[in-house]
Image (tube, rainbow, N blue to C red; front, side, top):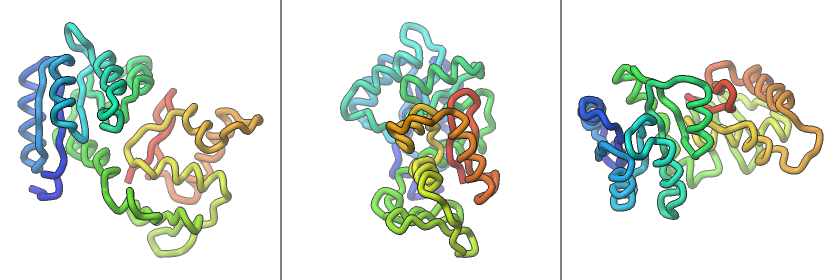
Length: 230
């Protein structure tokens, strides 16, 4: 059990008590503070009171489904930065797109093995690491990004050359490991108002990042965008 994990609050929301009990048990074994709710409305009230670091939210629930719950949470000022991961048996592209469009940070499909679930949760919570929030240098699985000096170093400590746009794209994706960045958001943040830009431009830059870093770090989320994992 990690004492570091005890710093994090996780709210589980699902209309099936068995699933809540199962996930809660495994998260508590890892030391996390866990809260549970059987419906979206109660989940919002708990979230307002506890301000969790992460909400794991089922999509299909009676009365108020996960999409509406997520949308309402994102409209509450002090909950805008809370991470939200959908956990659903629905794995269609349109369900995942709907989740990301209302502000989800990840979409996890059921069934999922406990160890894999815990791994996904920890990956999401890494973005709360104080060294990533406060330091200009990000250390991600052996890759180091120095945002002030515009330098990237591999596991052997050797510098990897990145043109400005590639560096900005890498820095954006690595700023929040596990978070899915949509193509629209990437275009806005990296290219801004530049005119000659399209999906093909992003694809080319992603391919160049993978050529230099390897294929393990940047994951494609079909029809949505990309995320950084380590």
